[in-house]
Image 1 (cartoon, rainbow, N blue to C red):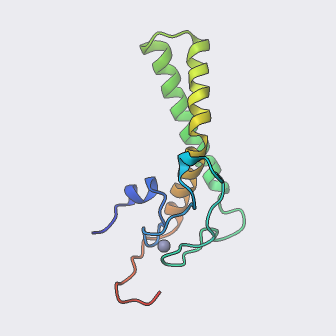
Image 2: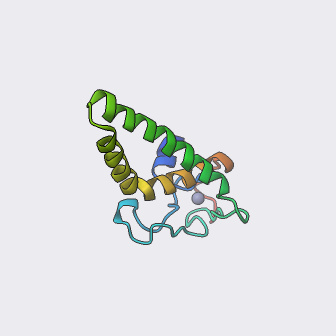
Image 3: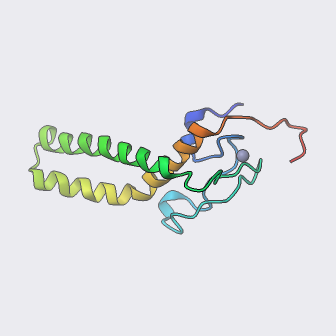
Length: 126
Ligand SMILES: [Zn+2]
């Protein structure tokens, strides 16, 4: 069965084969949070195609965090009816907890935007 692009992005798999993993540890283990494999273990796709490649992922991270923050702060302040101080305190705690996940999902999304899906044939030597 062909893995979907959303499943591949959220699972942080290789964008080319959608099988290999991009990061050696799980996100919420918080161990070696910024380590990333150099290549896909399944198809050999480079995860660092050129110097400064993940500069674009920084903008994705900013956009994701910005819209998330607006949504959470607005929800807590206007729907749950918390004070601004309480709303932003909770938001900062959530952002601190999700920091590694946002970092990784931004890199995954950026790599998927720049590398085409090319599944390996079953009898293809790797
Ligand atoms: Zn791969």
